[in-house]
Amino acid sequence: MSNRANHQGVIAIASAASYADEEQILAGITTDSLLVLLDGVEDPHNLGAIIRTAECAGATAVIIPERRAAHVTEVVAKTSAGATEYLPIALVTNLARFIEQLKQRNVWVVGVEQSGEMPYTQYDYAGAVALVLGGEGQGLHRLVRDRCDVIVSIPMRGRIGSLNVSVAAGVVLFEALRQRSAPKRVASPG
Image (cartoon, rainbow, N blue to C red; front, side, top):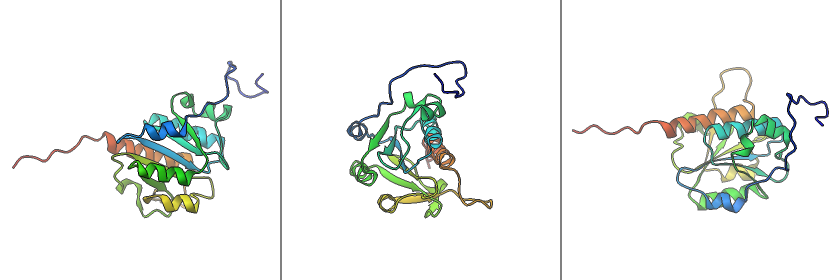
């Protein structure tokens, strides 16, 4: 049944992936929502790793486009270590239009790209935020990039110019989590 895949001693038969409804995701937006939007991530291992990391960081949902992107498969589910069962994942027809709908709901849209305007650590991730990460090689599509409120970057010190998209997602997601979890400073009296 495993077609010679590494089954680790267990095989289960499950139904096909079920996706969250786009309208339910939009209706569920709160002031502390943290969404991950993927613009053309095609490698199923990257998608699975991002879903796992997003779930671990407390993200609200992952949004992927219907076309030119990996979808949830058994490889994605396995790579996510089961996170596909806990984190809502929605397919959208048009990612740029979905971003516009998020902005109408007061969600700040933060693109992550090598040529970003500011280092990712300088952005304030408080409130409802959608992180947008581009696909392997191409990055963010122009229409998607143009709809972002800000583009942040991860400074590189080595000779390689960029991180794997799943690693970049982890870096920025956990910075957002760090900021959101930090105790609020109270001004001292006097």
